[in-house]
Length: 184
Image (spheres, rainbow, N blue to C red):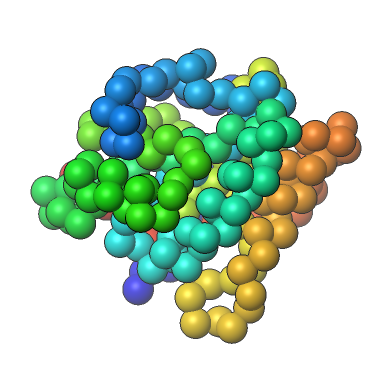
């Protein structure tokens, strides 16, 4: 299991725009369509990565918890489905249904969106303010498959809470660790 860290994405960087198909309802959405009133969390994930599987329940929990507070979560899979067919759109749709994703699960077939965000791994997590300026890019928490640390979502939660409560951005933003994005 590869342990790829997330790349640099500076605080204050504007969220790159995109328009992608949502595998859940088969409609096309732009970032503008999906952004939250107070914050937007963009997550690069996929179906098969053990690191994502390890945190999926917490991602669902946090998305449900924060959607009533004006925070929208958006999941994107950018993996090469020719070499990783388990990440194909029809299986993304099934997984989203099975896990009851409360967020869109978008398919980045060209991988241009992952490149625009300088995404490197799954999960790769970003938090943007109401103006789509970056305030956080880092890990969910310290838990990893097999390290016996409970999944709490503490780092992502703290970043969201700081934003919602007009507190400074987290000074210590630890990179996410996960499987590398499967590039074509």
